[in-house]
Image (cartoon, rainbow, N blue to C red; front, side, top):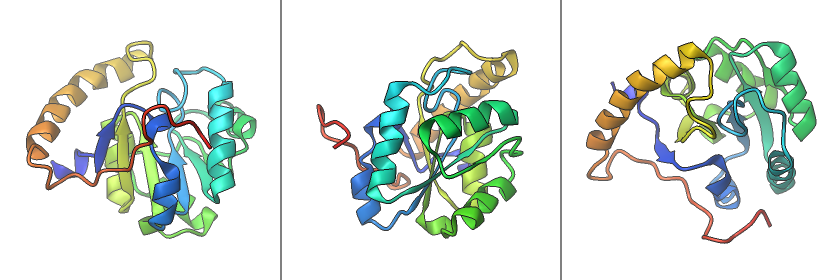
Amino acid sequence: MAKLFPDDYIESTYVIDFRALYSEGYRALLFDVDNTLVPHNAPADERAKAFFSYVKGLGYKCMFLSNNKEPRVKTFCEAVGGDGYIYKAGKPKAAGYLEACRRLDVAPEHTLFVGDQILTDIWGANNAGIRSVLVKPVKKWHEEPQIVLKRFLEAAILLGYRIYTADGRHVKKVPLKKEGENLQ
């Protein structure tokens, strides 16, 4: 069951202190796209573009790992200046995550994955030995029917996660930006 639990569960991708993570030795960031960075099937917005400009400026290599089709993932990657993408990634299998690390030439232990779904994103990152961060969906319930159905099962898993992490021993907290701090 622990393979389904994220290392941390936070409000949003945009509240993580990526500068602090860089100082901890992280060099690659892997992201799901839909409902992790923008609403499901939405184009890259100005916030996402500014965010990737910022993390790339810190020195990160960034890649997108999605079970979606290539046009969706490619368009998003190009719009934000990502270093690559893997579409139809087969999450939660570890292969796509490890391929992303290979392409970026960064070891899994120096890689962070951020996603909004437990049964694909988090389980897959954990299978690959990559630190996993679960974020709340950007726009919950405005998704494909199979994803909405998975959200109900994930709610039960999150209850187990809250019990498992109640004492704080099983959480690898990501540093968060201070309130009001922007991307500089």
